[in-house]
Length: 435
Image (tube, rainbow, N blue to C red):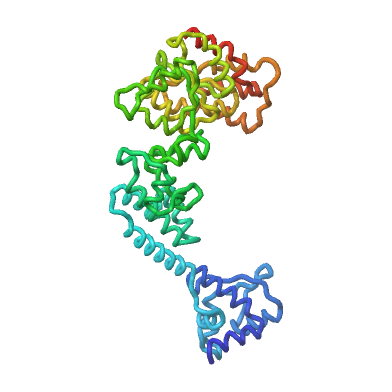
């Protein structure tokens, strides 16, 4: 008799639940291993006992070893094994192990095909080797997208591999991202943030240049990464407010001072400097080797008005982050720090203000200074009404701060309310007048 007849007979006897459970167990255990546990009615138990000779019931469930069921079917009038019966009823058996091996084989074949098509450039090969090894954020992104759309993943890897082989920074150049994408992929939007190749390119740039400062907003973090690669989504959206620079070197004319910097300082004006403009600076200097950095535009404006009457040589260099720093803000501070400029920072006494300060302290190390941003300054700014109660999450975050900002963070957490830099403008102005 055939395996198909055996399956039909067992189903007619009410034993299909046993076969279905056995099929799942074979899939999981990769063969006739172990046993299945299930609940059967009295009539089903009798039919199973007739087939096996005996049944084991424990806690209301029958235990059926697959080897025993296989042997019983082989001895029966059907003269066929359990695997044949299962395939007759449910189709060819592919176990979990076989699925994994097949998937691994397809993945390896896909990787080889995609990798063979990449430019033969050392940096590109090293990047793709980390993808193959599964040891990078790029690798995790590629594997995730491959599982849902292998063709889309392949196109993204090809585009990013080509981009890494031709990054403008490696030629000492800078190019707009849209123009770069159009020249490589024929589509100016190929590396846009929401496109697959754009997302993968960001991972690849993080791996090459390191992560951007944690306190950057997402779009500014992306601008920062692209800028390191010699690319820019645009040249004007990322800006930083600056006033009274002592000077800047203009890269288009090596050794020449930047005429606009001198003009703006002379007329006491503030300048919203774009990232694209800063890319054309090779150096920047602050008066008396100090750059005073504030968080809030109103404080920046107020201090500018107080400094307006001072002679140009007495006007302190002042920078406003406008909250968390932009890519332009970091580029300006990096230029100043490269000249040995001290970075004096003061901000609001809240989680965000202290987070900004923690990032600057980590980035600029021995050049970083607190400007009216210690525990005693918090207590002075917190006098009177106006502070907002801290949430438990904010308090916990502040209490976890280490390093030079730890005393200030603890003071704010203990005080339990925020305090604002606007409360300290008089003493800030006095500092600038006396420096």
